[in-house]
Length: 232
Ligand code: AP5
Ligand code: MG
View 1: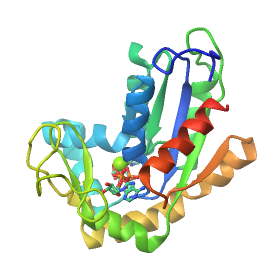
View 2 (view 1 turned 60 degrees about the vertical axis):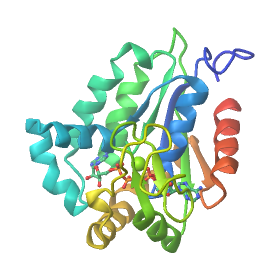
View 3 (view 1 turned 90 degrees about the vertical axis):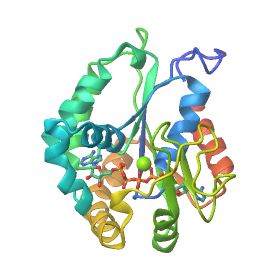
């Protein structure tokens, strides 16, 4: 991190990019980093789902594509990210969850981050890839339940809520994401292999890739992510 010895809540963290297949645990870990560092989670999937819920023009355009499990256009997501990163809450850093997802998105992001400083400091991004096997991804995606109000993520197998189908934090009724159907999962995993997996090599060549075994217990993964960020 940028300021040695600073408390996590005031430290300069810079850009942290979470790579990983659908269900790899990006959202789960991003929420824990938000708590530790007080920097925002920027999930392009969450932003798009908000547009769908609010029935904006962008949401209407994206809905069918997302429900099928395909990727939304680079132009749409890059514009969304540019606008989100200009928000003052990104000053000390941010977690990018689910972006970039294509080589074109990654090269666009490189250009944007090259111009960016964090409280006056220049920091290269830290890229963390969560690796999880196909069978585990399937189990995680089919068992996932999400809170519509606060975004908390549960799993009926591995991280069940205290009361079935009910958010521990706010009591809302949990829902299953539309794209967690068998058909959409298979399209998402294919699109990951073809369009997103090559990004690991892209960042490895730049020397910024850190691979974490995403099959461990969620707390062990959190410790590994913190170590990676703080040893930068
Ligand atoms: P998005 O919302 O980003 O979905 P995704 O990448 O498919 O990833 P997920 O959210 O499904 O998984 P996750 O890694 O966050 O896992 P989670 O923590 O929830 O994107 C959705 C759609 O939006 C895309 O298909 C596309 O259409 C569009 N889109 C978004 N970004 C785009 C972009 N950049 N370009 C173009 N289109 C874009 O965990 C999964 C489950 O596992 C949960 O139930 C959780 O409780 C459980 N779990 C987590 N960690 C563990 C653990 N360690 N052990 C056991 N269980 C665990
Ligand atoms: Mg997610």
